[in-house]
Length: 392
Image (cartoon, rainbow, N blue to C red; front, side):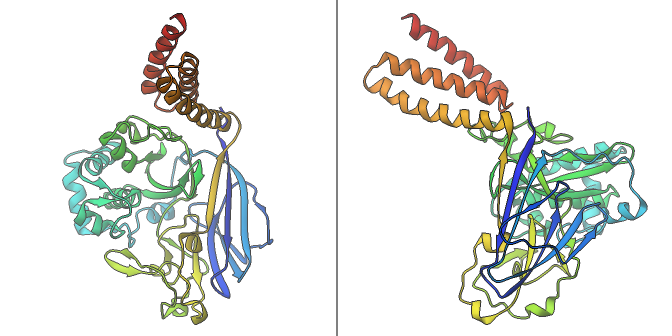
């Protein structure tokens, strides 16, 4: 099955005279549309990603469209000393200090192998923290205090605990590989000779607590334990870490005052204004961009939206995956239309139709590898029911 998706991203500057914008360039060839805007600077990072810096005048649109492969962890079997230090660093969102190390040591007990230490951290997070969106405040410390957070907080804590034990780890920022503005964050940790290994503790928590959580979703799910070491692959990477240094640097003095009509997000329980502040010249995360708004009082009454701060992205599956997804939607809609007709009017033909459409829905879901066990069982029941209806 085709595992290529199309990523379409737009940022339209309608809110200030001049805006600075940073994003990680996709490894695929980019096709700029609308206003053709070239980056002012491009820098290669330690992660081997390329960070691009753009300047957008009011009314200009950055439009990036590219095809990408669904997610696989990097096949990098060894880290240079410089890279190792980078993925062990202390950051605002994932601190590395004595307090965190003591917690990590208490979690891993006497485990000696890296994989078992990471597994113990995974089980600790999945077992003790509740998924809540949006979180009251971002960062490890609020997460430890409230025991509640979204995929970001689950990931920041995993990174923090691993790094405190000298296990290189990173917070992967990206999106589910379908839909609009469907962001997601997960982890990778590193073992010498094996490479980067994926971990998704927030999905493990969600699927452990409710196996039917994603029953109507296009997102494939795994048994919760498998999210340690595997993912379904149905995701796209925007940036291979959070709390990243912006190059060129974010000039904090440009934003001495908050002019814009926007709600603060909170990081470590302190107000933070996206696009008007940085974390010591770092972006909290690039999903897929970070912007710097020109503080112009002319715009102070304009209430900012999520699109004003992040832009807008849409990801479409291609090939067979896309066809099966459309078939799922059409069959379930038609089945739900035929179902009440069959019962209200006691109509045999409508009964056969809704059962047939449900069978198509279950088969399409199974071919997409979504909830195979549940849908296989329901498919069997529906086929038996359809045969009974036809024979009668």
